[in-house]
Image 1 (cartoon, helix red, strand yellow):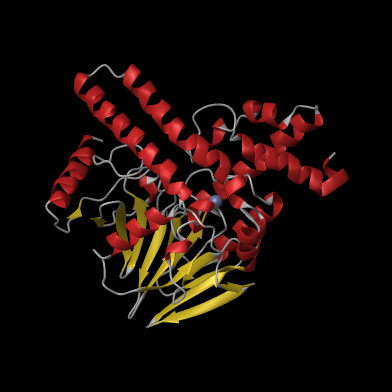
Image 2 (cartoon, rainbow, N blue to C red):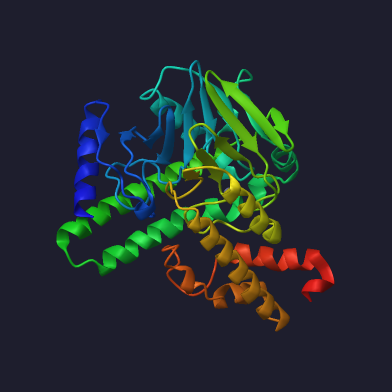
Length: 376
Ligand SMILES: [Zn+2]
């Protein structure tokens, strides 16, 4: 851990004098599954070079160890694909300001213009940067994404509503807890600095979300769309419903890279908009693709398809436990406190305690209601 902090501190110092710097590989949450990718550190985004012209972009402050005060609420990870003449982005960031910050940082990688944006799904942290792009940019997604952004009143519903309201406070509370538990004065001071940065960023975020104008894709597809950019083939695939009703998998067949949005993360995905049985089948279809690395919408790149099987096992387990509690007349909110998924923590270390995210369990109950008597 210490060497990681040193490496990042070095990156930050070089950043200050405006030098483009490739630093030591970053160790993410699933580091054991990641190859050591070279990193280009921008002001707000960190770019891991996965293949020639393919970069995995993560917001610069991930709540753990970034030393400068970038806004930690920039949300999802994105993929920047630099082609012969232009750039394609997979997802558009959480707010217009985050998208502008991304565009500024991309200048460290290339001067080529962004001409295509793919939204992997309709959730705010993947689409709310759409409004910064002019009409000359194709914003492409599954047709469900356009319908969702037009019909769901997404700024007043989940996941936007609770996530934007609660996430900043949750991060602030976490730092306060860590500060209270820290004995080492140096570490305590460092945490206090992070807390101050986070509090400042939370204030900015409140302003940032006021600027959001939900902007639907201007090109949609139903099953598959193949793009050719220079010598690169980029397949947009709808493999079935899962995390949402219209998840796109971006597949680069030559490079054997797949970008899965939140259909498959390296951590446990939000489940509040899910179609659970289809999600399992869709993940089977994902595993059949011939890819060597998965770039997820949150977490870190991973290579081992067994993580997908582990996530399927998590879904199956939470469904079974929720169904049992539901049959006993336990409410969704109480079931969320009682389901025990800790046996999956070996694959998903973010599972630290008993219980699961409440909106996901509410969705499981609603989905079982929609499916009718066979779940009663
Ligand atoms: Zn999502």
